[in-house]
Image (cartoon, rainbow, N blue to C red; front, side, top):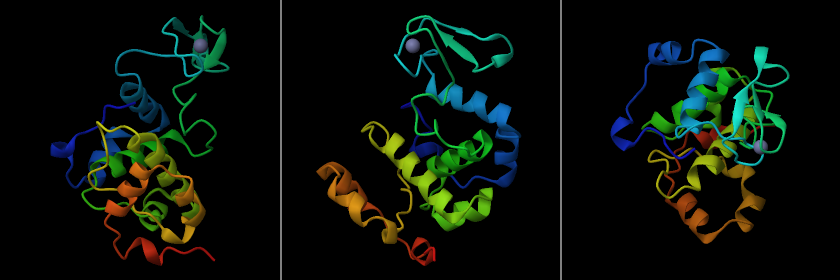
Amino acid sequence: MSKAPGKHYRKEISLMDMFNMFPDNEAATRWFESVAWEDGRLCGHCGSVHTSSVKNGKPMPYWCKGCRSYFSVKTGTPLQKSNVPMQKWCIAIYLCLTSPKPVSSMQLHRDIKVSQPTAWSMLQRIREAWMQDDEYTFGGPVEVDESYFGSRHSSMSNRKRKELKDIDRGAVGKRAVVA
Ligand SMILES: [Zn+2]
């Protein structure tokens, strides 16, 4: 899941763009598959390329012949255990990838109508999934709400810490404190 819009691609995105790209969960899933499986479909359990589509997509859209398991594009990603619909995930991811300014959990909370703690957790997972890759890092980094961050810092690599230090901490996210 390394391929993502590059810096040159990062511009303010309009609501219309979002509406056209992610009109529903189905379209959002197709987009996410195209990003995650740019080089072809892989099983999220074992990485096998020997997979097939499942008729009617039940219980899951794909079947792995390697490990004989069902999977979807969310399998093995930070989205796997989330109840947040794909449309909201994709809008959140796309916002993070394209926004010239850091995306705060308050902004996400308002933009995609999830609770602020859910928005925070989504941003966290997006960071973890995309910032590991040196080839791709968020140029306009995701806002960090420091009030939540304390314990996580200690278990982080130096590189990650540095990345966090480099983040431009605007005032916006800091107001986002949950009672
Ligand atoms: Zn497999």
